[in-house]
Structure formats: structure tokens, C-alpha cells
Image (cartoon, rainbow over all chains, first blue to last red; front, top):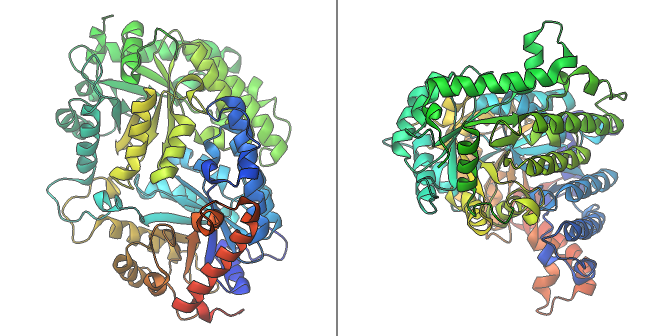
Length: 318
Length: 318
């Protein structure tokens, strides 16, 4: 953000729209297979190998940098699509960074199309990664696309970041694909929205069931809503559940017993902070020197709690 | 994927759960401020600068690698949270790659918690980035968390990838946060779900309005649903719209005229493929040598189309 730029993203964007006299923005979506031959031809390794991915990332980056130079005088903003950079792994993300720097030099607003979202401190980490012009964030975006599915408290950390660094958001309200009708358009129905999603997931899971009766498409269902968990278990007999919210977020082992079948299968239970940072809980002075012991002990304790209070205690090698 | 591993993610996961006799998985969420002092102390630059971010990425990576070594013998899977790596920019994503490689060496299943989603070829690019064990994908995940808000056709490219490379998904059905009630729990209501999201976004936009009457929190609304666009424009007077689906996806300039106010403000219109790859349309033989000319011409044509068919033709410098 240069000294004379407006403080608010929306004012910087509007100034650019007025100066260029168009609301058009250019999406930076470098599909590799569509690149002009001079760029594609620099890739000599197979693009499903790591050396090929690094070459493809370089080709896409070089192409995007030239596109930014061409469209820079004509439009107010570019919208890089993060998937087409993430596709190539770390070299792709380095390429994204370079393209953003080129767009900053061209005085363009940068709307990062990442459709990110998560909850609490995780949403804040995405916001710190992506939102904040110039050096204020890791990638230097002026605005970010955000997915609202997780609710208001998942969008709020992004909003807070916007107010802090003068950036902006675009929340996915009504998307352009035909599937936007599936959930976004629902109104009066006989069940709650997540149950519609549950039906879709169970159907997908049934299409490819493994040796123990569960499919390859699972569901994330929080430990913090045990009644909903029990009902979803009945509705989704072929779907493996990933259960977050165990431990630090307040979910208890007894609450999630219903997620398992009698063999102890059907769910995995995630614990993060309660294990990684157990050393901080064990000692008010945070005995950092013994953090490894605390990690191992917390892991063993969580395993024992699940074995005692859920059918996980019945797990046997097949 | 080693030669003797089961082909399906779900079977590899279940084999690991049985062998370790627990459904516990460990979330790899390296909050920098919680790291043990020996790791935090390696960071000497400010963490809101690029050198500090590189140091913080290295510290988080070193910590996560040790955690993987400690928990590897105890659990079947780890779940790296992508936000805590993306937070540090390209060095963070390189660190994620290293942590995944360490987890692969420890024979752990790797569930990447990215909560990704997008439509069509963009969803496919995320799937190629993240799904596919070992060298099969850029990052080498066994499974990925996916957000369902965009509908069935947005989840399907991830499902297709799973069937291709033997990986898995966990779709966000009912999340653990309190905000999961906001949209996921809705059932019988007087309006469609996206209109609930619209109310939230308009409220957030009103909290921080710029010089021209629009807030910093915008909405993505596809050009392909002109009636919904017009109705949302009435319901969201302080919200700037980002309109995708113009050009390649079939949205026309006349369809989106209602998104603008009389000054030509209130919306930005994205075109990606129609501009970047215009050279492929101009010539069946794809005259790659003149792709720059095609990019510039396509940009100018899109600008002219918007100026002719929408109030964008009224844009003036303030």
C-alpha cells in the first residue's frame, strides 16, 4: 500500500474502477494445457512428477506475469485463482507470490480467489496468510473470496483482519455453477440443511465401499453436537466420520461413542492442541524442555480415554 | 503408496486403526505462539516480515517433524491444518511438503485439512494438488477435507480424483463450532439459504462503508442467475458484488446490468479464460505467437461490451 493509497480496500478498488473506467477484472487462471506453446514447451519433464511440477509452475508464472503487464493499464484488479498455483505444490505457491508482486508493481488491486474458510484461530491464520496489501501478509492480497458454510463465527476472523489492515472480502452468496441450486437455493424443507449434505455424502460413499463396509467419501461431524452425531450415524451407515472438537473444544469420549460400530470402526477422532501443546497445560511455567514427553503422554491418554469410553476398545487386527 | 498398501484410502486407514488399536488421529496445527521455546527462539526477525515468516515456517516445520516422529508409532493418521502453513507464505507451503514427507516415511495416513472447494476444473486443480499418496500429487495427501457449499458438482471433481488415485475425502457436514447452527441447521424458512447468507454479508458490509457507499465485505454472485442477481441487488444495497461466470460460462453483459448503480459502481465482473486464452478462440490452429495481442484485444472487447450494456458506461473519475 503506497503512501497515497486510500486506507480501505473498497476505496482503492473504486478509485481503480473510475480511473480505468471499467468494472472488468481479469481472472488469473493459468490452466497449463491452455498455455501458449512457447510457455508449455519449456516443460520437458512429466507434469505428474516433482521436477515437472516445478517446470510447470515456472511456465505458468511467466505467462501470468506477462498477462499482468498486458492487462495492467486496462483494468483495476486481477483475481488470481489459488488452485492453479497450489496444483504445482510449493513452487506453485512461490509463483503465486511472484505474480502478486508483479500485480502490486502494476498498481492493481489483487483479489485472491481462494474460497478459504475455517473456524477461530485457523480462519485467522488464513486471513494472515492472504489479506493485507504489500508486506502486511505473507501473500499480499487486497481481498479474498470466503466460503460461508461454517457460519458467522467462521467469517468474523476474516472481517476482523479486513478492519485491521484495510483489506476486503467477497463471500460466496450465490455461485455461478449449476450445483449452486443443491444447497444454496433450499428454503422450506423437511430436514435441516446439513442433512441434505449428509444424503449427498452417504450416496457418494456407497459408490466405493472398502473391505469393512465404509466408503472413501467421509464426513466431518463435530464432537460438540452429540445428538446430531447419533442421528447422522443412523442416516449414514457407509460413511466414515472425522470428528474434530475432541479435547480442547470440549467434546468428550462418551459423547462420540455412538459414532463407532461394535468393532470400533467408522470414525477417526482428531485432537490437535491438546496433544501438540500439552506441555503448556502440564506446567503453568510451560516446561518447554520436556515437551516431547508431554506430547507422547497426552497421545497415550487420549487413546486410553477413547478405548475406555467408546467401542474403540474392541479394536482388533483383522 | 508402497507396493503392499491397500489400493483404497479407507482400507489403508482402517488397517492403520486396527494395527494401532485406536481411532485417534493427531491434528498438526502449529500455532507459532504456542511452540516450545527452543523452536520459537530460532526466530529472530519480526514474524510480520518476509524474513521472519521464513524463520517461523522453519520453526513450525521442525516442531511438526518431531511431533510426527513421536506420535507415528501410536496413531494411524495425522491431519495437517493447511492454514498454519499457508500463513507463512511459500516457505510455509514448503514446510508442509516436508512434514507430509516425514509422515509418509512414518507410514501414517495423511488427512489434509484444507476445507477446499471450487467448481469444475478449479476443483480438479485442488484435487491434483492435494490428493494422491506419495508422488501422485504435488503435496501427497491421502485424504482432504472439502466444503460442500457450492453443491454436488463442486464435490464431484474431488470424488473423481479419489477414485482415480485411491484417496479419500471428508466433507464438512456438521462442524464443531457454534456458528455451525447459522446455516447448516436451517430447515423450514421463509427464504432460500443463500438469502440468509446475503443478510449476514450485508450486515457486515454496513459496518465499514467506504466513500461511495459500499462496504469492505462483498459478495460473489454468479452472472448465470440474473433474476437472483437483481433481487440480491435490492437486498444488499451496501455490498459490492464480484460477478464470475461472465463470458466463458455464458453470462452476458445485459444480464448483469442490474448489479450496478447509476454511476456504474457496485460490482466488478470477472473474466478469466475468455481473456487469457483468447488466442485459442481466434484461430483453430491456436496462433500462439500472437497470444499477447489476443489478450489485449479480448480485454478491450470485454470492457466495451460492459460499457455498452451496463451503467459501467457512465463511469467517471470522481
